[in-house]
Image (cartoon, rainbow, N blue to C red):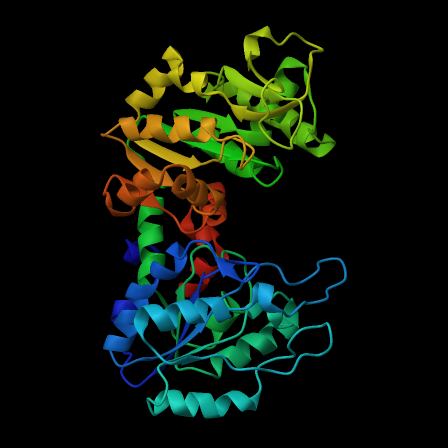
Length: 428
């Protein structure tokens, strides 16, 4: 598959005695705690291969968003540190891995890579330590910068190693550590990257009928992907705020909490979707709540969308009711599917879960279909709400859980894996 895109693969690299800089997507730390190590575990095959072939590993990832986009200040602290990740790897793999420290320019983050790292690299080459894990890439000024500042940091990163490996499919933004560094080092796709790209092909060339299920809290971040999915899919199912905004735009109703920009995008989508009206599956039953503070008896109710006349005003719509997924028409569509793509949490977590549970259980009933789950919140909620199904999904050939939901949507939107800049950079 990689040959088709002219992407060099890790198994073709000469690693013996080489220092290998590996960009991973270990962005699993929230407030200093790892809630799910799935993304870390998914890269271990790549790390083992490099080590077995005589390579010396330097790892790097981003964690969270330490940079304030308004002020450009970069906050360095425990909440976005790689230390919990390093501790996890030390315990899991029984290795001695060190994290270098650099000079912080006040609230502007790390200026760059300093020569103080040279003694660690020497220890790495001499096998006195097993690996180096760089601090959060977004703590460095050059990571998300443009032009010369990004090039300078990318060049510094390249100066640490002999070979670069990108195993971070989920990190699709064109930053120094994902794109810039490829200009200066022989660059390869790691095993996780290869697996993600191979499973993307199952979305680009799905076995029909192909159903896509997408939910989200903001329409603007998903609208281009929704346009692409509506064209490609046999059926498209919406959930979350996206579905609420769609209902408002189509039926002329009001739902509390829907913002003006969501309505603007929803109107464009409704207009676009008119030419694909048989593809859009409207889930008939929704849950209206008087409050967003919790699921309180007497303060929420199930509503049928056909009962919503123009001008109807609803309180917060916080979930799809489970009755939607036992509706005869909806059930028949999901039962007929041969490929299902899911990037969706249907309800407002953690209190409204029945829509997500009913959706995932209905999808699982279809034993013939390939089920492709987008990462992030979709994966987290599957694990939280249906842990048994999550465990089955990790090993079943009929399931695949991507590590990056946003990256999958970006790839769908672009129509090719080469539309993702870090993947495209590997081909140059």
